Image 1 (cartoon, rainbow, N blue to C red):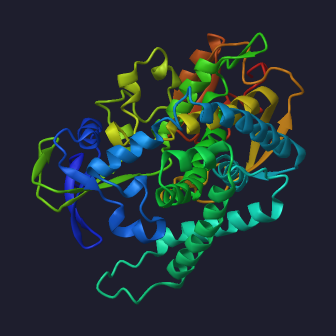
Image 2 (cartoon, one colour; image 1 turned 60 degrees about the vertical axis):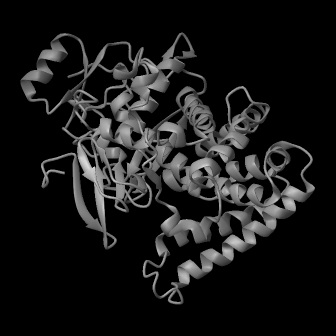
Image 3 (cartoon, rainbow, N blue to C red; image 1 turned 180 degrees about the vertical axis):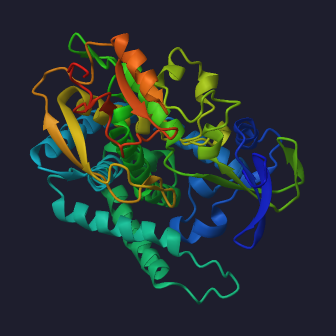
Amino acid sequence: MNNHRSRIFQARFLNQPTVFIGSNTAVRELLHDKYNCFRMGYKDFFHQIYGNSLLFSDGLEAEELRQSLHDLFQPASTSLNEHSVQIDRFAEEAVETMLSKDYILVYEHFKQVTTQLCLSLFLGLDHSLSVDLMKELCELSTVHWHGMISVPLSLSLPWLVSSGFSKALHAKEQLLKIIKKRLQTAEDGFPARIKTALQSEDAEQNLLLFISALVPKALSSLLTSFICCSHLWCHEPLIKNGELDVSLLECILLEVMRIWPPFIGGRRVAIMECTIGGFHIPKNYAVIYLAHAAHLDPEAFPQPESFLPARWKDCSDSDKEKLYCFGGGPRNCIGQHLVWTILKAVTSRLVMRSTWDIVENAGSPRKWLPVSRPLRSPLAKFVSTAGKPTWSSQRPAVIVMNADKQQKEDNVKKNLLVIACSDDPVCETGGTAHCFGEVAASCTSDTEIQ
């Protein structure tokens, strides 16, 4: 965008003319698609991997499919209420595991836990009683996911398929066999409800989408970012009188989503000539919206580079619609309420019951494809707080971006806990929060500043 000096520009991508959108308002215009100018753009590359599912449908077919699945994912639905019980149990086990080990590879641990959780939720499995099947499903879903980055792009030579893509197609068939069997025998839980809502083939294809690595990857990305940026929110009074401030936790999670969305964006294809954000888009052009860039648009978010959870305090629904972690408009993520439930279940327990220190790769560069995460997985030590309140300082705190010595001293004189950070929302010390004059252990103590 810097080279083009615009948040909307055109370039060739995958040998196709493509318009890139990083303007927050233009992304909203694209996703709401008031005049039905676009179709979903994922089918061109990933249809063989995922088959006919919600992700690849358009028009009336998409509307009918969403309507059929709608009730399964709403906050008040029986399905989601039942899921909450499983989610709480999984969150407890995940935190217990993290506290029982000397060190944890953060992203890998969350990926394993959330994969097992999604398999349990959507296939009605008890992971403690189906160890071998869960292991097989985890392995198959991993191979299936890897097919996404092995998709053959030369459509004129369809027989030249990469080995990774071939393995992914085989994994897909194996997964569908297991799904079909679960649907045939299911008498309750999500499998029973989805086979009531959809015809058998549609139920199978959409369950394949739901149990794929797509959801666990997104969850793992957000949870890892939450852990890695704790030096930016450790001064927040998350626990008051032994109780978790849930609204403040949500503000922190919203800011994590804003700065580190799990996926870089999404794709559409114009089915007619149109205009988005004042930019002319010819028919058949691809359009890629860049969620990360839209979240850093200063017209939508003042001080976009700064990590400011307070920006979400008392925010309206329209403010939240400026975030595109779950897409937006009529084709937004149908499972976003479920994702929120999982995020809050895990993070609330971590905050209430532990503190942590990232001992390796705290300042690792970030990779954005196929999912946003540190290039080198952070290694962390989690310590139980034995019920003692954490993440709250007795003294007010301030994050000083690019602070010089005089700024720090001025704040110390005001009895403020100073956390010095660079422009980027990653502390200049490589990820560990520093109080002026000494390192603060997770910045949870009220140590005198020297």
